Image (cartoon, rainbow, N blue to C red; front, side, top):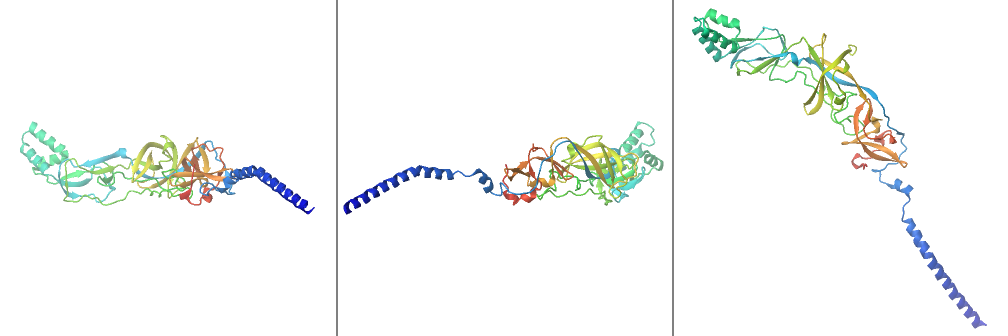
Length: 400
């Protein structure tokens, strides 16, 4: 009986081992399948495990861009200056030395016929001697000598004086040929050298100035009024024949010039109406019409000068102005300036997709009255209302 019991135990043990081996073989494919299934990440977790420079999880409010026609009023700076169409030049018709100079500073008022300077010219002295030699002969030689002196700049009254006295005028006077304000030709080319001023409504040249926390360009300087600087010409200085010495700006008709930033220039049209006023008296509002549009590159800046011709006026040259220009935009989408972040030359918005925010690059246009024009099609996007809150470090933002 004991031997039978041992044999039965051995048989049962062998059967149990066989069953365990069979069960292990049957479980291997299932385990392999389970292991292979764990290697595929869950899509709901993948979005949450992306780096913060490519995707941000936040509960910040979202907004949608608005479209439609918008009318904004942009403020620009300007200055009252002289009408360049009503200016005359004073040039030396003969070479010589300045013996006497009566103009001491730029923008000095002068009257027509006023003595400006006296010049000694050897050529004029020789021409006067020739006239005196042929003065007794009323014929072609005398007429030719008189004509030559007139071409050299002598006035008929001066020629008559030489003939009457028989003496040579070694100092030939030069007179003003118009009423106005005199400016030395070698000084500033334009009396109102100005660039766009930094105002709350006028964007910078790149169309994104002063937006977000990005690095904006430096604000241009405010236009300066003409300065009464001393002239550089001096007594004893030699001038050449044909050299332009002074320009006389006539004060009868003045103009108002305004500097328009490059980002707004395309919206400005001839005969467009605007309102302007002196910076120190906002109540003195006056309407005007744009009569000239001139693209300008000055002091490293691109901008546009618009000119309003003044009729009857109470302004004075050099007076600083502020103008309000209505601008109509019929295209693009509009977002608050806080929703767009400026990173170098890129404009970014944070678009909400799948419960998180992704930085996206967009193309922008004008920035006016706290709103940014986006030219890309973002009408169905949900974007963060304040992009600066989602920026960890602008150097590491990865956009699509």
